[in-house]
Amino acid sequence: MNDEDDEDVPEGAAVFPEIPEELGVHPLLLAALHATVFFVGSTKEVVNPGAADEVLGRIETYLQRLEGNDLRRVEEDMVCLITYARSEKWDRGLIQALKTFLSDMGVSSESEE
Image 1 (cartoon, rainbow, N blue to C red):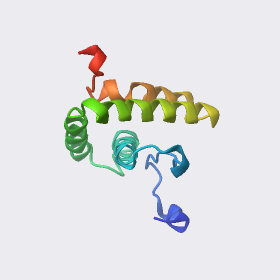
Image 2: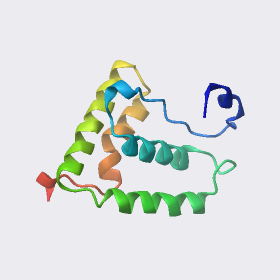
Image 3: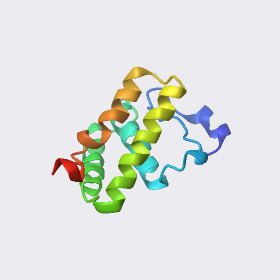
């Protein structure tokens, strides 16, 4: 999508802010975050709730497969995103969602196991 496509985003669609490449956050994590925000935050007029729950369940299952260096990388990337969100003065609710994203998805740190 490009900036011109923003005009076509329907009202009620939840869109996660764009994350600059310079942050170095893994693109697959960003894809999962963007999809999750869209499915969780969009109205039922935009996204079918049953379909959204099905997709979110799959995203959750795949994220729960993270371990070792991959898990550490994702945890570090989440810290980076939270720091960035605070510096950009994002809405508190969105920052809180970032802080709890991994635990909400059932992803536990190796130190928690």
